[in-house]
Image (cartoon, rainbow, N blue to C red; front, top):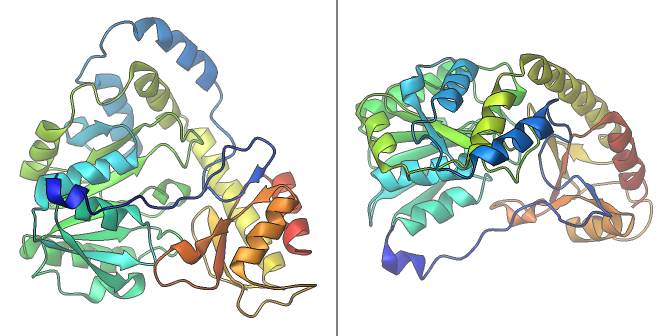
Length: 343
């Protein structure tokens, strides 16, 4: 990490609220968790009196089975964001430029700047057409946050090949890919994949995730990883969740069904962006108001007055008239539709 850059970089706004009285639609986490999580966590507490096995064999086996790779390619990290930082730290030096999509996850630019690098912003839907040759790295978010688009697998692999030929690291953030049946870039040479257990398994406070990389890149990440990078409860619960195939299948189906239902209903009032993720991006610039101002700030404020939290998406680069809403359970989604129909 570059010392001078640290002093110039600020924090990044995120969704999510710790107010128990609010129905949470501003963060894109699964409202359900796999059965058995509580007992696995409780059983792990006794073992937490000792340092964890730094090889994390059970967690790495479970992660490898989940994404279909060799366990040796799995690098345990305390969340997907830690996997992103690890990848950037391994390859980005002061003065390097990195291709970054927008609108997309704000932490990419922050993490690159912390290393002394400079993000070069490209519209997310034009990124695969960009020339990677002048850059130390490039970032793809698949599906993209906050739009929900997913890249065509063939085009994504072709871009990965171009990055490899240019000796440009490709960092693939697949935090939401588990909600889809689309293929991963896991195992692709020259690609560092970041995965998170936060979103799919509804455990943002657990801080469990992993990076996947092969060859020299994989060896570099494994060496650079902090010792004991996962606490014992996080590793045990993470491995348990990653093996819950039925839970994942049920979650994908519920999100697919509810997302389509919500998009149809919200489309009567807002411009709804097509999505393959557990959230929807709404352009409110031409919404049909029932009463009062129809701006992102006002919609967020009035929804909060009715105890529903939604995300003001104008904090994302390039968006000035948008809000983002998560896809939750049917009953909760009904409440959101009721509120947004009358704010």
